[in-house]
Length: 229
Image (cartoon, rainbow, N blue to C red; front, side, top):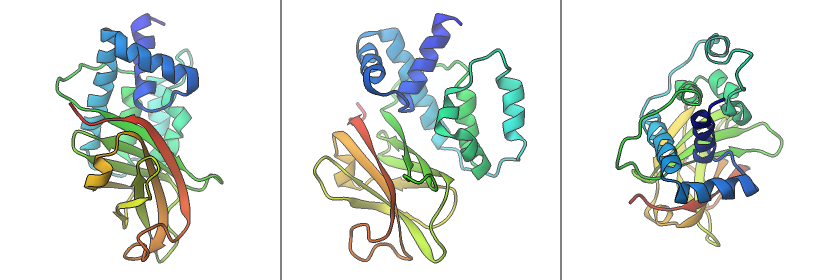
């Protein structure tokens, strides 16, 4: 495997939030000091931001088989997106998820002037609910795609966020569909450092208390959040 390919995979894992502990620290240091590697990271951010503009549509059941056969022969390292349970995303019908999978093995060109983009996964402890979230600081939006589970009958999903040591604030309701795009409230858009995202199930119309009142499926902390330059 060539070094540029390894760098692409490492940059992808950093952008997608798949690195942890020492690996995360090392990749962040490299992105801050290695111009060529930083360019690859920004390229991933730009490509994922463009992907977020695409509306989700139903994908055929044969997508997994076709992609595995055409893109990932037995001699190739399994795609990093398998660690995110991306096949659940495909089964959920989001073509955007398929595009992320394709980007994992194809090189990219880096457009200029693209701001920070952060990805994370919100998952329940018992494994019955999973969401992939993309925070776009250029547009101050969050795009969420359910890959497993949903609100109980007669209930609705609600998205929450907060900064360090702050109470949860509603980002918006998620009434239906596999994906939703929500504008970040000014207080959430102003968060620097760690941004926490969560999803709960609430009565139709949203929480009556201004805080999560139903089951909180899960939360995730996104570190090192900053605004677009």
